[in-house]
Structure formats: structure tokens, C-alpha cells
Length: 178
Image (cartoon, rainbow, N blue to C red):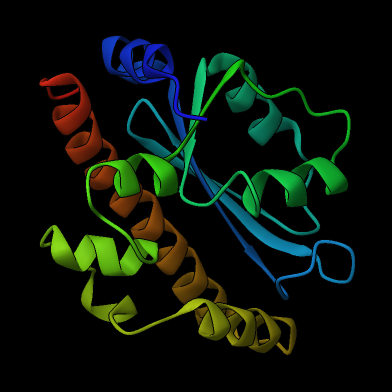
């Protein structure tokens, strides 16, 4: 459900928005696991890698008032909630998939980024979700560069979320979030 007050609140306090994107070993949260959680809060990117402690991520989630995802209602958040049931999310969640559709933008995140003219960094251009799974397994086999590329890919997703959010806020509210 689209709640305009969520978007208004987020646009008024952009430093309290946690942009969030996860990478996983597959699409089913019951059979697959999270490999990486990337986030940006107050323009600082952070990453949790499977096997690390959750303290830093948890602290950032606690500081946020709004979480912004793309398709997070049915993918990112259920995965995280299953893996970390005690983690408390902020009151507001903006799933850009639905907000973008309401302004005539549909398809996956990368398609919408393309429509909006977002250029991904050279090292992750053409990388897709299935490639992220392969990068994770290459990392597990000792390829440290694969982990760096996976992190860059996730960070590009986060940066794309920010552009889509700005566009959606402008279209729905007539303003650009600070």
C-alpha cells in the first residue's frame, strides 16, 4: 500500500533513510541464504557479509526512520526477517517497485535505472542477480576479487535506489528530497 506520509517523512529527513539491498544464493528464502546486505544511511555505504557479526548493520537499522528498497516487500525484508527474526525495522518502508509503477515506471530496478539515465560503474555494467550468486561462490572458493565485485555490484544497486527515490519523490510530492 502506498502511504504518502511515508514518502513525505522520508523526503523531509533524508539523513534518516536506510537504502537497502541484499544478495542471496537464490530466490527462495526457505532454501537459500543471504550472502551480503548492503545499505546506505546518510550517504555512507555499509555492507554485512555472511559470516560477520550483525552489530554494525543492526545499529544502522536502529538509527533509520525509513527503509527504502526495490521489491523489498516480497524479497529483501522477508529474507532478512527469516534470517534475523530479532532485528527491528523502522516504522516506515518504501518499496520503490510500487511507487515507481504509480508514476509509469515498471520493470526491474535496472530497467528503471536505464530509463532514468543511470550509468552503472564500468566494473559492474551488465552484471545481473544470477551473476551475483556466481560471484559469491567464486569468493567462497578463494577469489577475493569476486567479493569486491559483488560489493561494487551491491553498491551500484544502492546508488540506483537513490536515483529512483529522488525521481519518485519529485513526481509524487513535487519536490526533490534533500
